[in-house]
Length: 309
Ligand SMILES: Cc1cc2nc3c(=O)[nH]c(=O)nc-3n(C[C@H](O)[C@H](O)[C@H](O)COP(=O)(O)OP(=O)(O)OC[C@H]3O[C@@H](n4cnc5c(N)ncnc54)[C@H](O)[C@@H]3O)c2cc1C
Image 1 (cartoon, rainbow, N blue to C red):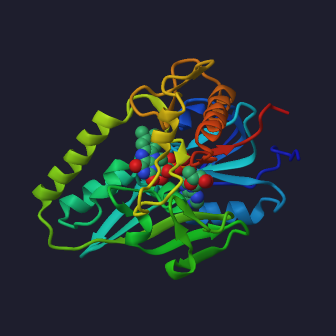
Image 2: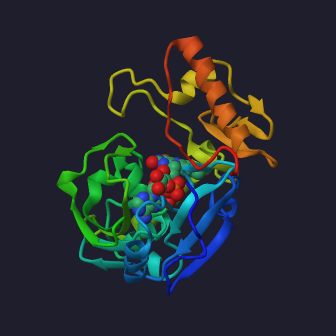
């Protein structure tokens, strides 16, 4: 569908038409959003969504560390919660109240500084809290659902919602979180009384381990495919081993390559298009299916149009 981007509701934040999204994603590829909206606060977001015709599609982008924006860009309005306001973090005993634009690493560091333990695993996830809730992000044996206490958001109609965590179904790197809700803030629970120095050392150790085993300095989207079996499954099959066994390490399509360092990561080696990256992912899936019979599931979100209208 097309919509009249000249007739958009008034906002206090920023509205940009035909806004390139590549700079907002880790892969640095993809086309433009018909409209990019950076709301000033919850009120601004709610008023905008209430006034925006309900048929206009709305897509939320965190920091794009788990997303491929396709080359044709994204139809409708893309919302991004960025800036100082959306990165707010407050700590009260063991509870961390944070807005969705806060980086997981910043939350881990703030919790450590306040002596709140149990949240250091967040330092291994290079996304925003909004993205972490949506994807049930996790590492080092913990995931968001282990620490999430409450979630607030704004629904597509513009109304505020508070979603009881007990009503969200969490599974491995997946939630059934309502697709039309923009998560705006949440509370995570750790344990008060931890030692800040010990927690800071824990974070430093997580980061060193990452740098050693993952191409974190590359343009990438993290693990491309979910492991076929969730953690804890006896003889768990992991995607990288299946990809390795299928001979895909270093495989290339255009400017996209399977990382030599960690073969469940695809990287943009400089001039990739989103189509290159997606085609490479599909080639890997086909080779793994042929080699081991396993049909890998994309963990990375792919959004938007293949070609501009
Ligand atoms: C080097 C590297 C390492 C990684 N390691 C890990 C890891 O160990 N564990 C792990 O789980 N992930 C990992 N990832 C993937 C990624 O960091 C996580 O999935 C992260 O939670 C995504 O957050 P984001 O803000 O980048 O979300 P995006 O990629 O921008 O979006 C992901 C999804 O979340 C939704 N979303 C984002 N913000 C909101 C919001 N406010 N409200 C509603 N929906 C929202 C989007 O619509 C989309 O569906 C890694 C990625 C990279 C690049």
